[in-house]
Image (cartoon, rainbow, N blue to C red; front, side, top):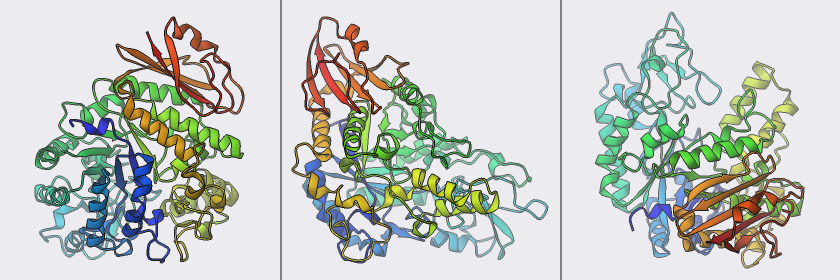
Amino acid sequence: MADWWKKSVVYQVYPRSFMDANGDGIGDLKGITQKLDYLAELGVDVIWLSPIYQSGGTDAGYDISDYYAIEQEFGTMADFDELLLEAHRRGLKIVMDLVVNHTSDKHAWFQESRMDRNNPKRDYYIWRDGHEGQMPNQMMGYFCEPAWEHDAKTDQYYMHLFTIGQPDLNWENKQMREEIYTMMNWWLQKGIDGFRMDVISCISKPAKAVASDGGQGMDCTNGPKVHAYLKEMHEKTFSNYDCITVGETPGVTPDIAVQYAGFDANELNMVFQFELMDVDSGPLGKWTTQRYDLLDVKRTITRWQEGLFNRAWNSLYLGNHDQPRCVSRWGDDSTPLYWEKSAKMLCTFLHMLQGTPYVYQGDELGMTNVRLDGLSEARDVEIFNAYRLYVEEQQVFTHDEMMANINARGRDNARTPMQWNDGKGAGFTQGDPWIKINENHTRINAQKQVGDPDSIFSYYKQVIHLRKAYDIITDGAYKILDAENPNVYTYAREDENAKLLVMCNFTAQEQSADHVAAYLGQGKYKRLIGNYANESSPTDALQAYEARVYLIEA
């Protein structure tokens, strides 16, 4: 089916934390294979695997040392082949995480590149002379450290937008690009169903970003040749396969996203935008405990729903491996009732929008943020770098303030082990887990929810089924209703035959629903789903974190 990904729901697996089959405390490929029936029952179509390649170990697999090998902790290539086969047997597709903005400093290319200035692989990476005894320029990377590292052997600096162990590739080098495309085709020929492409909007570096002039550098997103590179990539790889491609694209607006993922762009199927992830940022970006304003959420979602309609395709997500748990951030995990209702409300809100929804592992159970009692319980390099910068060096935050920020927004929140049951290892492992297991696994786990018709898991199943049953959810135009209401998000989806009314209360207080009376008109309506048992009419007041969806036929 053409554009099958428009009807699909993608489930992101973070392999290190999903299921440990051999008892070493680290999730693995055999563990994922063991849980394929669980994913099939949920009703998702595509499994996106965070990186499973051989890695340098500095940034949770996003520093690849060999694109053709499986990280030993996760298993073997035979284990991957078995996973791919068993997934396909169940009608599940497999998407790989592709990291080609940078490699590990342990990759053979970089090992050769740093040998001497005349090495054939030297130009695979971005090397520059220093400026007056200092770094080439003052550009900072994404992880709270300078974007340049001195290499004594050749007395030059290499660029790394992320950790020191993640040198950036030089996409100006045609031979390097050809090697990337060869590798991508190798995986596609093996039978995988597509790629999620890490920070792909950063692969083309503006001249000022790499200049050895002592200046400030500049933003590396959406560089001058990024679209030329992606069109070339599409021609040499994607165009030959029926696959799904999604790019992680910091720095895009709807108009820029259309350049990447427009229906006639010949680049990507869709992109991940970051505007929604930034609506609750503070003066220092993500390191804050402040809550979002629903009006900002509405403006952002509406901008993207309207801006891409009939031009490109939205990726819909409220969390992933880099974000806090969605029910803790966007919902309310303060009481069991609010936790359950808000998790279901958020599911409704997201999946009724136009686009392809992405479910991060555990969202379908309502997994929450974890409380880290100290820095010793953290595992993420970004957390350590931020703590060093903001507490030890700049003294912007006290220890307690920074720990509050980490517990609210740190990436480890999403990386605690999947909660399969209420046992000691949460059903994730028989050994000592690589990262802390959330203590609430005794209450929140798959064993308690699968088969319970009132559970969050069962609600996700119902919503996913609705997406497949009603074309209006895929194709209908989006229309915001009551745009200035700070508490309730109401929107419609419309096509020539019907309307879909979606009502979501983002608060713990009862809210009026009078604003939908005029929209209902004379049409007949039926309730498709809701997170409260009562058969309410659209104009009945919304209870705490209530969500309702109605089909209105003329």
